[in-house]
Amino acid sequence: MKITVVGAGNVGATCANVIAHKELANEVVLLDIKEGVAEGKSLDMWQTAPINMFDTRITGSTNDYSKTAGSEVVVITSGLPRKPGMSRDDLIATNAGIVRSVTENIIKHSPEAIIIIVSNPLDVMTYCAFLAAGVPSHRVFGMAGILDTARYRAFLAEALDCSPKDIQAVLMGGHGDTMVPLPRYTTVGGIPVTELIDGQKLEAIVQRTKSGGGELVNLMGTSAWYAPGAAAAQMVEAVVRDQKRIFPCCAWLQGEYGQQDIYLGVPVKLGRKGIEQIIELQLNEDEKALLNESSKAVKEVMKVLDNMNK
Ligand SMILES: NC(=O)C1=CN([C@@H]2O[C@H](COP(=O)(O)OP(=O)(O)OC[C@H]3O[C@@H](n4cnc5c(N)ncnc54)[C@H](O)[C@@H]3O)[C@@H](O)[C@H]2O)C=CC1
Ligand SMILES: O=C([O-])CC(=O)C(=O)O
Image 1: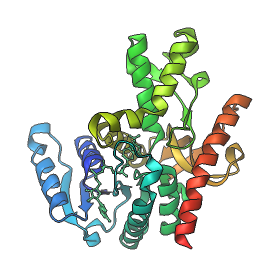
Image 2: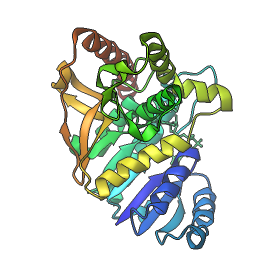
Image 3: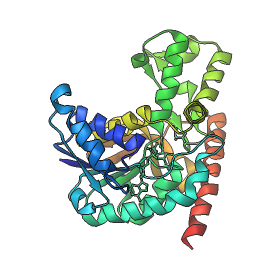
């Protein structure tokens, strides 16, 4: 099993590191356009193997895609991160070109790969990769929902003074400030969260989750990487171990939730074939309205991409 991570920056390097620690493959290739960076970071990570006791071989490549040949799973993290004052959508002009060319190179050398997109703006970059890859949509999907629900679960664990392990949650929509956390589908050890926390506190946590990425950008001057890297690695794990886990992921919708021809966050089953099922929840009218609003916001950014491609 060979896995490639494109982009050896904060998120890509973290993701490769988690993949190696979990021994999800015998080989991980880290690729970046910056001379020597992927080689250096992968050598550094490989030198943790005798300490952390893993045997996944990590190698680096400066833009040489022949080294990625035959990868079964590829994670694309290449592209600019945002700075304070920017929205994720502001990254489209630069990142669309990067994601398109990276995807074309990846597919040329690994025609059977499953591709997981991380670059922002996430939903539209996943669409961009889907167009460039020309493979079925169950093999091209994006990481956002695992990260966003992890933030939501972490905030709830703090507020309830309980283990984050016991919190289960669903969140839908685009990976932007219009994302839709679903308190009605949030449980703590099987107990509906609404029985454990008052409405105002819960609403404050929902709002904090929606701007969770921005909170970190303001603190650090660039965006997050530990949780994003771990979240992408969790998706890789579900695929390579054929776990059939249920996660919110950015998936191509063809009528589900009344959405057509759009990549949007929805609960899916992830296994060896990639997205093996899109799970349709019975949303109430308020939830449907929020999802429609989020889908509208993603469609606006899709239009920008379509105009760039003309
Ligand atoms: N989906 C999500 O939930 C999240 C998405 N992101 C996004 O992930 C992306 C990466 O973020 P960071 O790792 O923090 O940025 P970073 O700047 O640390 O790393 C990006 C890397 O991509 C490389 N790169 C640029 N063009 C390339 C090309 N054509 N081929 C190969 N490599 C190339 C750069 O040299 C750099 O090393 C950003 O777009 C960011 O917004 C970040 C966190 C969460
Ligand atoms: O906020 C950003 O720009 C990066 C990201 O998507 C996140 O951390 O959720």
